[in-house]
Image (cartoon, rainbow, N blue to C red; front, side, top):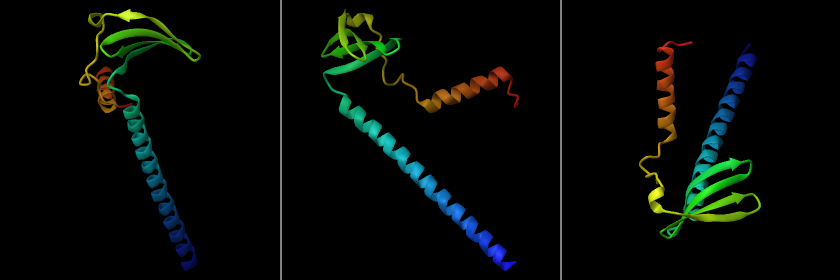
Length: 124
């Protein structure tokens, strides 16, 4: 009986060790992914050029409004080419402030609160 209990304790200890290592690797990979995303975003952004808005029009085809200096341009982007479409007046563009951008957690909490309002707060 002591052989069985010591074997069980050993198995439980191994399970917790593997679980802790898994959580550590998961947290490390999440941290690295977030760091790489911020690093690439910083490398891609510049003072003179910025993508203002991107709209997908078909599979693999987009229209982008970009700011070059103080002028706004419209381009068509596909997998194989980039085509200049024309200029846009600054007064015609609605630029979102960084304050208007919502965090994912805010959107998620709003979605759950809306779901509760629709279902009347009842749990299924």
